[in-house]
Image 1 (cartoon, one colour):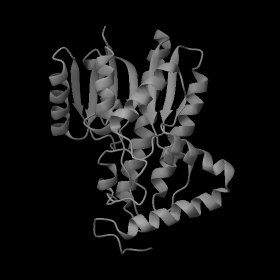
Image 2 (cartoon, helix red, strand yellow):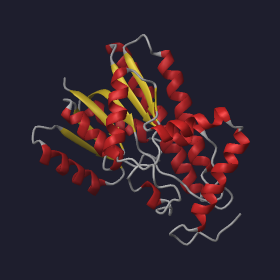
Image 3 (tube, helix red, strand yellow):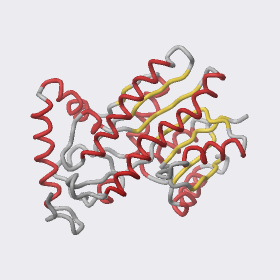
Length: 271
């Protein structure tokens, strides 16, 4: 049975870059995304690099409560052995907590926390049986600091960081590598989708290809917490040097400036 890499949010950004790396490394691919058209485009893009790549697509809204089970059932129906899981899908909800959409918050928390956790729950027992497997959860450098105006996003990423470290410890002697990727700002559509396509801090923006390669290489080496880039490492270390209150104030000041010039119609909406 051919080894498959299951990549959520695989139609673009870091997910698609990671898919290209996995395909080059000999994995077959199962790309999962909410956007069916972008999934088809991603497959075409990958096959232009090599017609030998084996790529399965599954269109799924991962904010649905039964999303993980549907993805898992698809793997069973199609007899796909998942040897690598990349919980990559995600989005943000930028704005004051009292003003931001609960519908969007709930969907985001479902994708980042519940669906990702459920996929791990479903796939890890099979990996334990085979004594082999890789899991990479895409958190963020946001996981290390609280962030006013991005409170639920940062909190959900902190969950992924803690979950990954704990599960990695549980399975460390079983042949399974569990890692958590904590990138900083990356050249994807993430910021624009949140009305924040002109952030104040721009010097530290990495490419999705670079982040994906660092994530893959570190996962294969068994590194648990992966923070690409020196500035992101410093950001992750900052709460150990300064008080959490001071760090929260610093991040809040930056986010308020970003909010004031956001590109949608919410810049002047305050709690």
